[in-house]
Image (cartoon, rainbow, N blue to C red; front, side, top):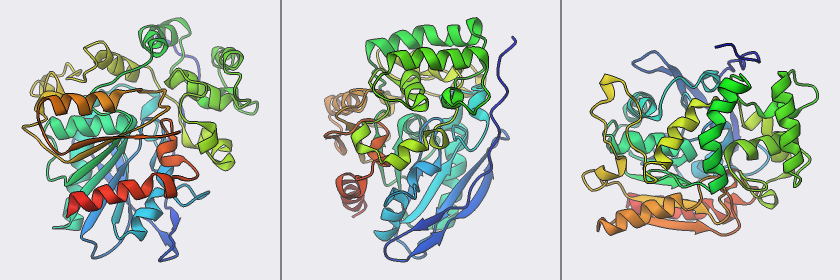
Length: 374
């Protein structure tokens, strides 16, 4: 099949300078890793030697570890370091630092059995007997839950999951896009992926890509930024869909094309499978080596029990009600240790990237981690 558009560049991993309040500016250390099936991924460490608790931060699809070290405000990595955590930032194969998202040739199951064991094993070797917590977002959360309840990883003290984990729920318009978009983009428009940069005047884009950006702009009148509108169109059904404008700093909004990368359509087939199978993620991969994975990952909750805080913004237009449904289903099984919290005024991405998260979100997460680790 012929596709329009050149491949997205493979970006290099980054060394971050993180401005903490207690220790000043600290540079992260970069640790390149390779999965057993040859996928190059990495972990960045904001070291806190001697810490009794480590935390792994997991980004969502097409973002990266950048979302936790944003220099325009007091970010999550700096906040957690100031609270005494040894902080690790994953860049797995869904990261915008790499070019894998322009291909989309793998499933969530593959990430669960490959990327997360590689990353968790590295952290375990580094921290020794320290407790390991996980804070995960969007499809990063989904794939980590695949690993946790597919029994590819263990020894996790607690999990904080934002937006979606085991049970995807979407708005009807988003469900319609899940049905139609992969065929239209791949086979009709013959686009290899959808890129938020297509609406920028100085960015080279395929004809149908630029046309798509213009059409989307006619529907999304709430914002003059074509990148913001394209991200909303791709992911959800809100105006905007990915965050609430009032929660996002102007500096963050101006660099959306740095924070969100291109996305290929096979991911949406994986999400569609979960949505149309009774809103439950299960094994999607057809590869023989994945036959051991469960038909429904939530069925292993109980056999595997990890204290978990399930979060969602009140105005989540990407996976509305998903984590609430997961919490309700686990409660029906009579399994303790799983909590649900809804964040007033927040959407999907702004839960971690919002300008006031250090006052409105991060303290609640820290309190949960402290309680779970005691």
